[in-house]
Amino acid sequence: MEAPSWSVLQRSGDEEKYPDAVYLSEGPSSCSMEIRSASRPGFELVIVWRIQIDEDGKVFPRLDLLTKVPQRALELDKNRAIETAPLSFRTLVGLLGIEAALESLIKSLCAEENN
Picture 1 (cartoon, rainbow, N blue to C red):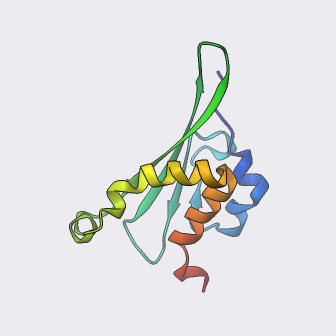
Picture 2: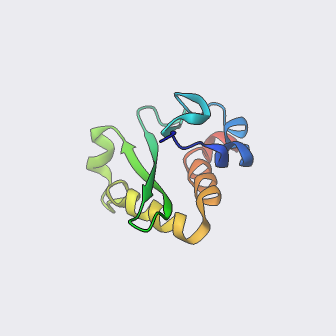
């Protein structure tokens, strides 16, 4: 099966709007997208895109959020926001849709850089 495309990202222009934050290692055919913050070194979010096909042949895109953060940030995260980020992102995708959820995530991580 062909790797899923980040055409959603390209249509919304996030890669162009946030060239310093959004990285697709293999271009539009990447299976993952990295979101980095210049103001928070070592803090990175990785979105992994997979396709699931059920027994009836229905195709479902699945986006998972992985966090890469310094150990010190984990220790200081008393509200467990980093730990619960993957589930929160899945909820956000369900509420807003893929494009809006990605845009929201990028904006939240890069808010300081765009002000």
